[in-house]
Length: 114
Ligand SMILES: [Zn+2]
Image (tube, rainbow, N blue to C red):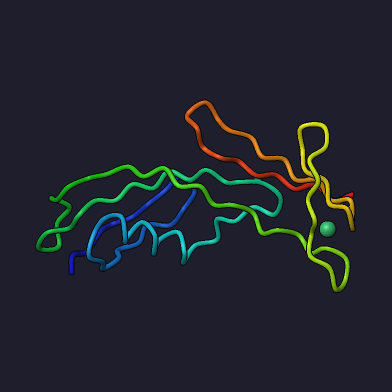
């Protein structure tokens, strides 16, 4: 198990024990509050391996997408998405879901309540 110092813009600095920098980044995201209510949040996480308590190992940059929670549909229903005018619209509650792709092919989801 290695220790990685993890940080992100407007995020805390944490030392996380993990098998890999990828895993440390996942734990960092899971333990943080990165979810935006209505759209995908793009977070850049920097990890650096600590060797003997010093920041002397491999440094990596991770681009992470944190998707928003799907809003609830009306009671007893699950959303039933129907493609409509570049978005998906729920047949039951009228909520709109827009999925776009950024230039670097990252999927971005946005919800808008009716
Ligand atoms: Zn719905």
